[in-house]
Image (tube, each protein chain N blue to C red):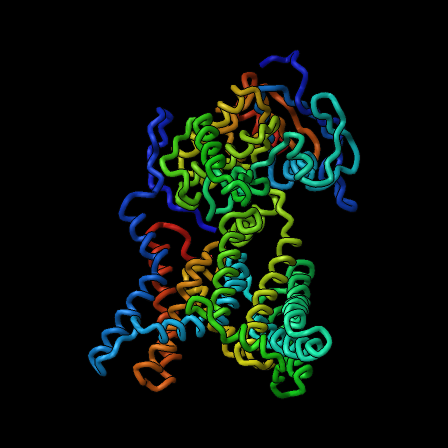
Length: 249
Length: 354
C-alpha cells in the first residue's frame, strides 16, 4: 500500500501490566489509510490486551497512542468511538430484537416531531440510513423493519460493520470476525473487509485463521508473550513462517 | 446466545435482495402470535356472549353496565401491569408493586384527611395525589439502586421491597383501613363523564402516555435494547444504571397511581389494596405477549392481557360460576400464551432458550 501516507493510528512503546504480569511490553505499530493489519498470536499473547488498550477499555501502563498524529488517551470505549475507533466484538454487540436501523443508531437515536410538537423516534431516518449503509457494504435487505435476529451470522456481522461505517469509524478493530461463521459467510465478511479497505479506512484484524489473514491483510504482526515476535508484509511471507513466529520456533 | 441457523443462503454480492428468513408464512404466524392476547379476548367475549344467551337469554357484551364493570375491574391490574411491562421488557421483574400500591392508597387517604379541613377539598386531593405518588417513588428508587448499583437480582431486590412496603403500609394504616372524609374524592372515584367512569378516563390517558413512552422515545428504545442484550446497550453508550433507576421509580409510580385511584373508588386507603393484583399484573404482561426473558412486549398487548383477565373474572361471576374457576382459567390462559410464544420462536427460527 501507500507507505508514505500519514498513519491514521500509531501506537508506540505501549505497555500494560496487571500487577506483576506484563501482558503487553513496548509494543509499537502503525496503520495507514486503507491498510489491513492482522494481529496474530497464541492465546495469552497480548492481542486482547492491545485492542482493549487502544479502544479505551482500560488505560495502558505506559506508551502513547496517536490518532492522525495527535496524541490521544481514552478513558472509556465511548470516547474512542467518538474519535473514530470502533471495535467489533466477536459477540457482535447487537440488540437482537431491534431493526438494523435501530441498531445502527442505538444510544444516539434521531428524533423528529409529530403533529409539530410531540418528539418521536425518527424511524424513517433510521430505516433510510440502514438501507444506504448496508447498500454501501453491498448487502441488500428486503425488510428493514425486521429484527436482526431474523438474519444469519454473516449478515449480522455486516450490520455491526455497517454501524461502524455509518458513524464514520476510521479504524475498525475486528476481533475474530469470521469465527462461528459458515464458509460462505466467512467469504462475505472477507469481502466486507476489502470494501472497508477500499473506502480508505484502517482495519485491525484479529484472527486465528491464517487462511483469512492471508486473504485480506497487508501486513501481519505476530505477538508472543506480550512482545512483537515479528512483523511481515503478507506478500513477503508464508504460512510456515508465521506459524514459526507464533510458536517461537 | 444462539444465532439463527445458517441455511446456506447464497451470499452473492450481485445486488440481489437476500432472503432474510422473513417469508410470508412465518410473518403470518408471527402476526398471529403477536395478536394472541386480542384473539383470546375476542374468543372469551364470544364465549361468554354465547353462554349468556343460551343459559338465560341475556347479553354479556352489549350491556353497558357489564362493559363499565369490566373496565373498572381492569383499572388497577392494568396500571400495575403498565409499569411491569417496562420492567419485564428490560429483563427484570417488580414484585413490590402490589404493596407499593397499598402504601400509596394509605398515604393518599391520610394526606387528604389531614389537608381537607385547612385547604379545601380540591387542593387536598391534588396534594394527596402528589404525596402518594412521591412516596410510592421511594421504594421504587430503592429497588432501582439495588438492581442497578448493587447488582441485586430484580427478583430478590423487589421481593425484599415487597416486605418493606407491606410492613410500612400496614403500620401507617394502623393495621386497618383508613376511611377518607372528602366527598369530592369519592366523586372522582365513582363519578362518570359521558358514561365512562373518571378512573377509567384517567387510566386510559395514562396508559396512552406510557405507550408513547415505550414505543416512540429513546427511553423505550433503550429499554428494549437492555432487555435483549445489556452488553450491546452498554457498548452503545447507554447509561444502564441510570436507566434502570428511572425504570424502577417509574414502575413504582404506576403502582402509586393505582393506589390513589383505589382509595378514590372505595373512599378508603387499605394496605392490602394491591395484594392480589401483583400476579395479575405479571399475568397481563405475559398474556400480552412479553417474554419474561426480556426484550419483547408492548403496552397495547398488556392492555389486551389485562382485559383478558378482567373479562374472565367478571364473566365467570356474570354467568354464575363458582369464583374459584377464575384462578384456573387465568392460569390456563397464561400457560397457553407462553406455549404459543415458544412455538412461534421455534417456528421462526429465533432463540428459544436463553
